Image 1: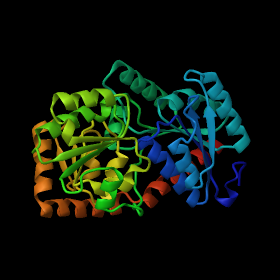
Image 2 (image 1 turned 45 degrees about the vertical axis):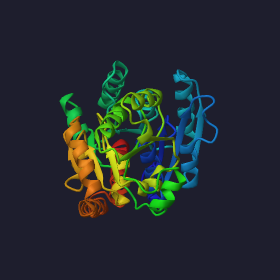
Image 3 (image 1 turned 180 degrees about the vertical axis):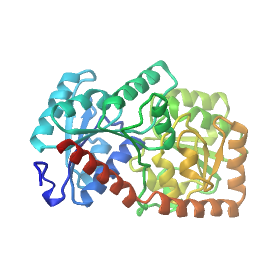
Amino acid sequence: MNQTGRQNGELRVLHVMAPARTGGLESVVVELSAGLRRSGHDVQVAVVLAPGTEREHPVVQALIDRGVPVHVLVLGARDYLGERRAIRRLIRRLDVQVLHTHGYRADALLGDLARREGRANVITLHGFVGGSRRGRFYEWVQIQASRYASAVIAVSQPIAERLSSHRISNNVHVIRNAMAPVSDLLSRDAARAALHLPLDMPLVGWVGRLSCEKGPDLFVEALAKTDQKIRGVMLGDGPELSALREQARVLDVRERLFFTGMIPDARRYLHAFDVLALTSRTEGTPMVLLEGMSARVPIVAYGVGGVPDLLGDAAAVCAPGDQYSLVQAIERVIESNSLAQSLANAALQRVSTLFAPEKWINGHIALYDQLIVTRDR
Protein backbone atom coordinates (compact mmCIF):
# COMPACT_ATOMS: atom_id res chain seq x y z
CA MET A 1 0.00 0.00 0.00
CA ASN A 2 1.76 3.19 1.23
CA GLN A 3 3.35 4.70 4.29
CA THR A 4 0.11 6.05 5.73
CA GLY A 5 -0.82 2.86 7.54
CA ARG A 6 -4.10 2.44 5.64
CA GLN A 7 -3.44 -1.28 5.19
CA ASN A 8 -5.76 -1.99 8.13
CA GLY A 9 -8.24 0.73 7.16
CA GLU A 10 -7.46 2.84 10.21
CA LEU A 11 -7.32 6.62 9.97
CA ARG A 12 -5.23 8.71 12.36
CA VAL A 13 -6.93 12.05 12.96
CA LEU A 14 -6.27 14.79 15.50
CA HIS A 15 -9.03 17.32 16.19
CA VAL A 16 -8.04 20.64 17.77
CA MET A 17 -10.29 23.20 19.47
CA ALA A 18 -10.22 25.87 22.17
CA PRO A 19 -13.64 25.12 23.64
CA ALA A 20 -16.09 27.11 25.67
CA ARG A 21 -17.66 25.15 28.51
CA THR A 22 -20.60 24.33 26.31
CA GLY A 23 -21.82 25.06 22.79
CA GLY A 24 -22.64 23.70 19.36
CA LEU A 25 -19.05 23.54 18.12
CA GLU A 26 -18.06 21.63 21.24
CA SER A 27 -20.95 19.16 20.84
CA VAL A 28 -20.00 18.55 17.21
CA VAL A 29 -16.39 17.70 18.05
CA VAL A 30 -17.42 15.39 20.89
CA GLU A 31 -19.97 13.47 18.83
CA LEU A 32 -17.85 13.39 15.68
CA SER A 33 -14.70 12.11 17.36
CA ALA A 34 -16.67 9.51 19.32
CA GLY A 35 -18.46 8.35 16.16
CA LEU A 36 -15.22 8.06 14.21
CA ARG A 37 -13.69 5.97 16.99
CA ARG A 38 -16.71 3.67 16.98
CA SER A 39 -16.03 3.19 13.28
CA GLY A 40 -12.57 1.83 14.13
CA HIS A 41 -10.36 4.88 13.61
CA ASP A 42 -7.64 6.34 15.82
CA VAL A 43 -9.16 9.75 16.50
CA GLN A 44 -7.92 11.95 19.32
CA VAL A 45 -8.65 15.52 20.44
CA ALA A 46 -6.33 18.31 21.56
CA VAL A 47 -8.10 20.83 23.77
CA VAL A 48 -6.50 24.26 24.30
CA LEU A 49 -7.51 25.84 27.62
CA ALA A 50 -6.52 29.00 29.43
CA PRO A 51 -4.88 28.65 32.85
CA GLY A 52 -7.48 28.19 35.56
CA THR A 53 -10.18 26.77 33.25
CA GLU A 54 -8.86 23.22 32.96
CA ARG A 55 -10.33 21.79 36.16
CA GLU A 56 -13.45 19.68 35.60
CA HIS A 57 -13.99 21.13 32.14
CA PRO A 58 -17.29 19.66 30.84
CA VAL A 59 -16.06 19.23 27.26
CA VAL A 60 -12.97 17.32 28.41
CA GLN A 61 -15.14 15.13 30.62
CA ALA A 62 -17.62 14.50 27.79
CA LEU A 63 -14.79 13.27 25.55
CA ILE A 64 -13.43 11.02 28.27
CA ASP A 65 -16.89 9.60 28.96
CA ARG A 66 -17.17 8.64 25.28
CA GLY A 67 -13.76 6.97 25.22
CA VAL A 68 -11.98 9.64 23.18
CA PRO A 69 -8.30 10.27 24.13
CA VAL A 70 -7.85 13.92 25.12
CA HIS A 71 -4.69 16.02 25.20
CA VAL A 72 -5.23 19.08 27.41
CA LEU A 73 -2.92 21.98 26.52
CA VAL A 74 -2.99 24.74 29.12
CA LEU A 75 -1.68 27.85 27.40
CA GLY A 76 -1.89 31.60 27.71
CA ALA A 77 -4.42 33.47 25.59
CA ARG A 78 -1.70 34.63 23.19
CA ASP A 79 0.81 31.81 23.52
CA TYR A 80 0.56 31.05 19.81
CA LEU A 81 4.10 29.71 19.47
CA GLY A 82 3.54 27.43 22.44
CA GLU A 83 0.39 26.08 20.83
CA ARG A 84 2.13 25.44 17.53
CA ARG A 85 5.01 23.64 19.27
CA ALA A 86 2.62 21.49 21.29
CA ILE A 87 0.53 20.52 18.25
CA ARG A 88 3.67 19.78 16.20
CA ARG A 89 4.82 17.37 18.90
CA LEU A 90 1.43 15.65 18.89
CA ILE A 91 1.37 15.39 15.10
CA ARG A 92 4.74 13.67 15.11
CA ARG A 93 4.19 11.46 18.16
CA LEU A 94 0.77 10.25 17.03
CA ASP A 95 1.83 10.08 13.36
CA VAL A 96 -1.29 12.04 12.46
CA GLN A 97 -2.54 11.84 8.88
CA VAL A 98 -5.20 14.55 9.16
CA LEU A 99 -5.24 17.61 11.40
CA HIS A 100 -8.82 18.80 11.76
CA THR A 101 -9.32 22.23 13.36
CA HIS A 102 -12.43 23.87 14.82
CA GLY A 103 -12.71 27.59 15.62
CA TYR A 104 -10.92 30.64 14.30
CA ARG A 105 -7.86 30.32 16.57
CA ALA A 106 -6.98 26.77 15.58
CA ASP A 107 -7.91 27.38 11.95
CA ALA A 108 -5.58 30.37 11.66
CA LEU A 109 -2.67 29.00 13.70
CA LEU A 110 -2.34 25.40 12.62
CA GLY A 111 -3.23 24.87 8.96
CA ASP A 112 0.16 25.76 7.56
CA LEU A 113 1.83 23.74 10.34
CA ALA A 114 0.01 20.60 9.23
CA ARG A 115 0.96 21.15 5.61
CA ARG A 116 4.61 21.78 6.51
CA GLU A 117 4.58 18.46 8.36
CA GLY A 118 3.21 16.75 5.26
CA ARG A 119 -0.26 16.16 6.70
CA ALA A 120 -3.69 17.07 5.37
CA ASN A 121 -5.49 19.85 7.21
CA VAL A 122 -9.26 20.17 7.43
CA ILE A 123 -11.21 23.17 8.71
CA THR A 124 -14.84 22.93 9.77
CA LEU A 125 -16.71 26.23 9.54
CA HIS A 126 -19.48 25.95 12.14
CA GLY A 127 -20.88 29.40 11.38
CA PHE A 128 -19.73 33.00 11.28
CA VAL A 129 -20.10 35.30 14.28
CA GLY A 130 -20.26 38.60 12.34
CA GLY A 131 -21.77 41.68 13.95
CA SER A 132 -19.08 43.39 16.02
CA ARG A 133 -15.67 44.49 14.75
CA ARG A 134 -14.10 41.56 16.55
CA GLY A 135 -16.63 39.16 15.03
CA ARG A 136 -15.95 40.46 11.54
CA PHE A 137 -12.21 40.08 12.13
CA TYR A 138 -12.65 36.45 13.20
CA GLU A 139 -14.71 35.85 10.10
CA TRP A 140 -11.99 37.34 7.91
CA VAL A 141 -9.35 35.16 9.61
CA GLN A 142 -11.31 31.98 8.94
CA ILE A 143 -11.99 32.91 5.33
CA GLN A 144 -8.28 33.52 4.72
CA ALA A 145 -7.36 30.23 6.41
CA SER A 146 -9.93 28.46 4.22
CA ARG A 147 -8.14 29.52 1.05
CA TYR A 148 -5.16 27.30 1.84
CA ALA A 149 -6.73 24.37 3.71
CA SER A 150 -6.62 20.89 2.20
CA ALA A 151 -10.39 20.84 2.69
CA VAL A 152 -13.07 23.03 4.25
CA ILE A 153 -16.24 21.50 5.67
CA ALA A 154 -19.23 23.85 5.55
CA VAL A 155 -21.99 22.68 7.87
CA SER A 156 -24.65 24.40 5.76
CA GLN A 157 -25.11 25.50 2.17
CA PRO A 158 -25.19 29.24 3.07
CA ILE A 159 -21.69 28.91 4.55
CA ALA A 160 -20.48 27.30 1.32
CA GLU A 161 -22.09 30.12 -0.65
CA ARG A 162 -20.38 32.68 1.56
CA LEU A 163 -17.02 31.11 0.77
CA SER A 164 -17.89 30.99 -2.91
CA SER A 165 -18.50 34.74 -2.83
CA HIS A 166 -14.82 35.03 -1.82
CA ARG A 167 -13.82 32.74 -4.70
CA ILE A 168 -13.23 29.76 -2.44
CA SER A 169 -14.99 26.65 -3.72
CA ASN A 170 -12.63 23.96 -5.03
CA ASN A 171 -11.78 22.68 -1.55
CA VAL A 172 -15.22 23.18 0.03
CA HIS A 173 -17.43 20.24 1.04
CA VAL A 174 -20.91 20.59 2.53
CA ILE A 175 -21.38 18.05 5.34
CA ARG A 176 -24.33 18.94 7.54
CA ASN A 177 -24.22 18.10 11.23
CA ALA A 178 -26.11 15.09 12.51
CA MET A 179 -27.71 13.89 15.70
CA ALA A 180 -27.93 10.47 17.30
CA PRO A 181 -31.13 9.76 19.26
CA VAL A 182 -31.08 11.19 22.77
CA SER A 183 -31.55 8.13 24.98
CA ASP A 184 -31.34 9.61 28.49
CA LEU A 185 -33.96 12.36 28.32
CA LEU A 186 -35.66 13.31 31.56
CA SER A 187 -39.44 13.40 31.63
CA ARG A 188 -41.23 16.75 31.58
CA ASP A 189 -41.82 16.84 35.32
CA ALA A 190 -38.39 15.45 36.22
CA ALA A 191 -36.62 17.99 33.98
CA ARG A 192 -38.61 20.90 35.41
CA ALA A 193 -38.01 19.75 38.96
CA ALA A 194 -34.26 19.40 38.32
CA LEU A 195 -34.14 22.92 36.88
CA HIS A 196 -36.40 24.36 39.62
CA LEU A 197 -39.05 25.41 37.12
CA PRO A 198 -42.84 25.60 37.63
CA LEU A 199 -44.59 22.34 36.75
CA ASP A 200 -47.96 23.75 35.70
CA MET A 201 -47.19 26.71 33.42
CA PRO A 202 -46.54 26.98 29.65
CA LEU A 203 -42.80 27.21 29.16
CA VAL A 204 -40.73 28.33 26.16
CA GLY A 205 -37.05 27.40 26.35
CA TRP A 206 -33.84 28.83 24.91
CA VAL A 207 -30.48 27.03 24.96
CA GLY A 208 -27.07 28.40 24.02
CA ARG A 209 -24.23 30.74 24.76
CA LEU A 210 -25.39 34.12 26.03
CA SER A 211 -23.60 36.17 23.38
CA CYS A 212 -24.76 38.66 20.79
CA GLU A 213 -24.73 36.39 17.73
CA LYS A 214 -27.07 33.93 19.46
CA GLY A 215 -29.70 36.63 19.97
CA PRO A 216 -30.60 36.03 23.63
CA ASP A 217 -31.80 39.64 23.87
CA LEU A 218 -34.25 38.94 21.04
CA PHE A 219 -35.65 36.05 23.06
CA VAL A 220 -36.20 38.30 26.07
CA GLU A 221 -37.94 40.86 23.85
CA ALA A 222 -40.20 38.19 22.39
CA LEU A 223 -41.10 36.78 25.80
CA ALA A 224 -42.16 40.25 26.93
CA LYS A 225 -44.68 40.34 24.08
CA THR A 226 -46.20 36.90 24.69
CA ASP A 227 -49.24 36.13 26.80
CA GLN A 228 -48.60 36.76 30.51
CA LYS A 229 -49.22 33.10 31.36
CA ILE A 230 -46.16 31.99 29.34
CA ARG A 231 -42.87 31.59 31.17
CA GLY A 232 -39.39 31.52 29.63
CA VAL A 233 -36.18 29.76 30.63
CA MET A 234 -32.67 30.30 29.31
CA LEU A 235 -30.13 27.48 29.66
CA GLY A 236 -26.62 28.81 29.20
CA ASP A 237 -24.01 31.28 30.29
CA GLY A 238 -21.94 33.94 28.62
CA PRO A 239 -20.90 37.58 28.47
CA GLU A 240 -24.43 38.96 28.03
CA LEU A 241 -25.89 37.50 31.25
CA SER A 242 -25.83 40.71 33.30
CA ALA A 243 -27.27 42.76 30.43
CA LEU A 244 -30.04 40.20 29.93
CA ARG A 245 -31.02 40.31 33.59
CA GLU A 246 -31.26 44.08 33.35
CA GLN A 247 -33.22 43.85 30.10
CA ALA A 248 -35.67 41.45 31.76
CA ARG A 249 -36.13 43.93 34.61
CA VAL A 250 -36.72 46.87 32.27
CA LEU A 251 -39.24 44.90 30.19
CA ASP A 252 -40.98 43.70 33.36
CA VAL A 253 -40.51 39.98 32.66
CA ARG A 254 -38.07 39.21 35.45
CA GLU A 255 -40.72 37.15 37.28
CA ARG A 256 -41.54 35.24 34.09
CA LEU A 257 -37.98 34.45 33.01
CA PHE A 258 -35.63 31.91 34.60
CA PHE A 259 -31.86 31.83 34.10
CA THR A 260 -30.36 28.43 34.92
CA GLY A 261 -26.73 29.12 34.10
CA MET A 262 -24.61 26.57 32.26
CA ILE A 263 -26.17 23.09 32.41
CA PRO A 264 -23.91 20.15 31.44
CA ASP A 265 -25.51 17.91 28.80
CA ALA A 266 -28.44 20.33 28.49
CA ARG A 267 -30.18 18.16 25.90
CA ARG A 268 -31.32 15.82 28.69
CA TYR A 269 -33.65 18.58 29.94
CA LEU A 270 -35.36 19.49 26.66
CA HIS A 271 -38.67 17.88 27.64
CA ALA A 272 -39.05 20.66 30.19
CA PHE A 273 -40.02 22.94 27.29
CA ASP A 274 -43.39 23.22 25.58
CA VAL A 275 -41.56 25.09 22.82
CA LEU A 276 -37.86 25.43 21.97
CA ALA A 277 -37.03 28.86 20.54
CA LEU A 278 -33.97 29.85 18.51
CA THR A 279 -33.46 33.59 18.04
CA SER A 280 -29.93 33.67 16.61
CA ARG A 281 -28.69 36.45 14.38
CA THR A 282 -26.36 34.04 12.55
CA GLU A 283 -26.05 30.23 12.49
CA GLY A 284 -24.58 27.25 10.68
CA THR A 285 -26.40 24.01 11.48
CA PRO A 286 -27.30 24.43 15.17
CA MET A 287 -26.85 21.28 17.22
CA VAL A 288 -29.50 22.43 19.68
CA LEU A 289 -32.12 22.24 16.91
CA LEU A 290 -31.05 18.72 15.99
CA GLU A 291 -31.28 17.79 19.66
CA GLY A 292 -34.73 19.34 19.91
CA MET A 293 -35.92 17.54 16.79
CA SER A 294 -34.62 14.23 18.12
CA ALA A 295 -36.36 14.87 21.46
CA ARG A 296 -39.69 15.69 19.73
CA VAL A 297 -39.86 19.22 21.11
CA PRO A 298 -41.78 21.69 18.90
CA ILE A 299 -39.45 24.37 17.52
CA VAL A 300 -39.91 28.04 16.66
CA ALA A 301 -36.89 29.68 15.03
CA TYR A 302 -35.60 32.59 13.02
CA GLY A 303 -34.63 31.41 9.55
CA VAL A 304 -30.98 32.47 9.62
CA GLY A 305 -28.02 30.67 8.01
CA GLY A 306 -28.59 26.95 7.65
CA VAL A 307 -31.71 26.90 9.85
CA PRO A 308 -34.35 26.77 7.07
CA ASP A 309 -32.43 23.99 5.30
CA LEU A 310 -32.24 22.07 8.56
CA LEU A 311 -35.83 22.45 9.72
CA GLY A 312 -37.76 22.42 6.45
CA ASP A 313 -41.48 22.37 7.28
CA ALA A 314 -40.92 20.52 10.56
CA ALA A 315 -40.95 23.73 12.61
CA ALA A 316 -42.34 27.25 12.66
CA VAL A 317 -39.60 29.17 10.81
CA CYS A 318 -39.93 32.96 10.95
CA ALA A 319 -38.18 35.68 8.99
CA PRO A 320 -35.00 36.79 10.78
CA GLY A 321 -35.79 39.43 13.37
CA ASP A 322 -39.57 39.30 12.80
CA GLN A 323 -40.66 39.57 16.44
CA TYR A 324 -44.37 39.60 15.65
CA SER A 325 -44.23 36.33 13.74
CA LEU A 326 -42.05 34.71 16.40
CA VAL A 327 -44.43 35.66 19.21
CA GLN A 328 -47.45 34.50 17.24
CA ALA A 329 -45.78 31.17 16.46
CA ILE A 330 -44.87 30.56 20.11
CA GLU A 331 -48.42 31.26 21.24
CA ARG A 332 -49.98 29.08 18.51
CA VAL A 333 -47.82 26.09 19.37
CA ILE A 334 -48.53 26.44 23.10
CA GLU A 335 -52.28 26.84 22.56
CA SER A 336 -52.66 23.98 20.03
CA ASN A 337 -51.68 20.53 21.21
CA SER A 338 -52.39 19.09 17.75
CA LEU A 339 -50.01 21.61 16.10
CA ALA A 340 -47.33 20.88 18.70
CA GLN A 341 -47.64 17.13 18.12
CA SER A 342 -47.61 17.54 14.35
CA LEU A 343 -44.41 19.61 14.43
CA ALA A 344 -42.75 17.25 16.90
CA ASN A 345 -43.54 14.16 14.80
CA ALA A 346 -42.38 15.82 11.57
CA ALA A 347 -39.16 16.94 13.24
CA LEU A 348 -38.33 13.44 14.50
CA GLN A 349 -38.98 11.98 11.04
CA ARG A 350 -36.79 14.61 9.40
CA VAL A 351 -33.83 14.28 11.76
CA SER A 352 -33.99 10.47 11.60
CA THR A 353 -33.81 10.37 7.82
CA LEU A 354 -31.82 13.41 6.69
CA PHE A 355 -29.48 13.93 9.64
CA ALA A 356 -28.64 10.38 10.70
CA PRO A 357 -25.17 10.08 12.28
CA GLU A 358 -24.01 7.26 9.98
CA LYS A 359 -24.17 9.49 6.91
CA TRP A 360 -22.35 12.26 8.78
CA ILE A 361 -19.55 10.01 10.01
CA ASN A 362 -19.14 8.29 6.64
CA GLY A 363 -18.92 11.66 4.91
CA HIS A 364 -15.96 12.62 7.07
CA ILE A 365 -14.26 9.26 6.56
CA ALA A 366 -14.62 9.53 2.78
CA LEU A 367 -13.15 13.04 2.81
CA TYR A 368 -10.20 12.04 5.00
CA ASP A 369 -9.49 9.08 2.71
CA GLN A 370 -9.59 11.29 -0.35
CA LEU A 371 -7.15 13.77 1.17
CA ILE A 372 -4.70 11.08 2.27
CA VAL A 373 -4.69 9.43 -1.15
CA THR A 374 -4.18 12.80 -2.85
CA ARG A 375 -1.32 13.66 -0.50
CA ASP A 376 0.44 10.35 -1.05
CA ARG A 377 0.20 10.69 -4.81
